[in-house]
Length: 132
Image (cartoon, rainbow, N blue to C red; front, side, top):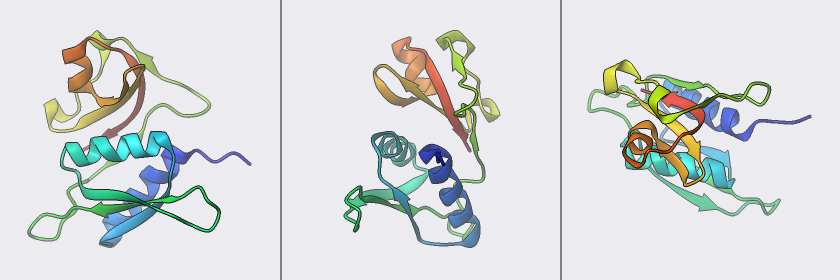
């Protein structure tokens, strides 16, 4: 059985935010670490760090961020490109989420970055997910 680590990470973040948890644990991988780095840089999570586990792969501890009134900063996370159907877009066709209020996370040959960074650097790639 093959498990999609990106979908697993996004589901854990989505469920943890809806449940009001302070942190969630995610299996560590380079792509998940790249996504967490983008989420931290854009202000959707407080922080993340890598923690050792028994199997040696490690876990990412993701600290979720909430507004003053207790509502989660991340209202929706949606996986776009899936294992069965990859979605690649050129830079001029990258979507705008909620008129710029959300972000699109893109995997490029220069690393994981947002749609705005892709437009600035004129780089296209695989659309991983949308966050707002």
